Amino acid sequence: MRHLYILLTICFTVPILANAQIGGSVFDAAKNASSDATEDAKEKADRKAVEQGMQDFFGGINKMADKPMLVNCLSIMSEHARQLAELQNQFEQEEECKKKKEYIEAQSLAALSAGTIIYCPDELNSDKVMYGKKILEFLRPFFVHNMNGGNASGGENLYEKLQRLKSKLKALHQEVVEMSSKDVEYKMEHGPALWSELQKTLQEITEISERLASQEAQELPEDLVLINTILSNYLYAEIKFGNRYSSIKTMAYIINPENIPKEEDRAKFYISVVDYFTYYTSPEFMLKRADEIDFIRRNLPCN
Image 1 (tube, helix red, strand yellow):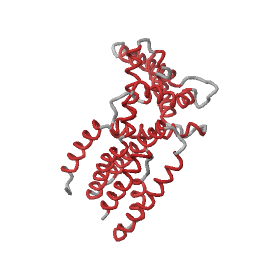
Image 2 (tube, one colour; image 1 turned 90 degrees about the horizontal axis):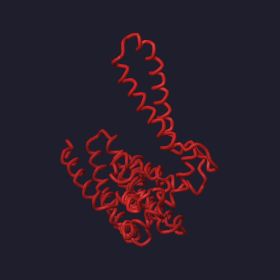
Image 3 (spheres, rainbow, N blue to C red; image 1 turned 180 degrees about the horizontal axis):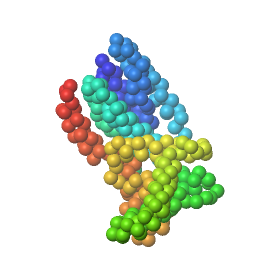
Image 4 (cartoon, rainbow, N blue to C red; image 1 turned 90 degrees about the vertical axis):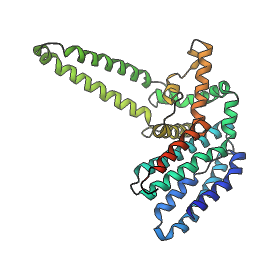
């Protein structure tokens, strides 16, 4: 019965998604309702989950009705990526075999549901260079804000600082290698200072990386909150499933692609941006993930 409710939800939302391009958190609602329900009340919880999912779904339509197509598509595709990642996370955290099987089966349904938003990737793939530019234009204010340490009026570029620290770390590691061939007296004299500098550099790299990876500690301007949500969703999916196309950090570092000398290389970069954001709705990912899920299911002890 639980799977019937999920399938009914997907079937009901498919035609609306195809036209409205708005996504709902149906799986999230189902997850939350199920976690609150006892074994004897699962059917009631599933019904409640569907109802809540529909409310969230239509609420999403109202909120996004006044936004451009590109923004709506990035939002719904990022939500799809987040749902997949969350289901994978639940599968990894669960210890009971039957529940693990339910999570991986739900993920299979979610992966296939990408077909309901086929308009978005189809449109973006129709002119990858143009849409790659538009996506970067949409993201650029967030990247500028982030790179300036949350200070839109200026400040040190955190990405550039991170690159400098990585270069410094590489040089320090080389010093450690060279020191290994020195005599004991030299090591006693210079070793402690080198070790201290190495630890300090590693700490700085960790702090900046965490700062760049999360905006939670910053007061984001209202117009950047949506971008932060979209990028966070994609980063979550990238951690769980990988993404062989241009990463968000690469996009941020190359904040002005016009600085790329060759036009051909700029075009390749724009194309990789579109490929990144459409990856989790692509046939390439769906086929790959379907094979992986099939392998996982067949090897579960409770299969």
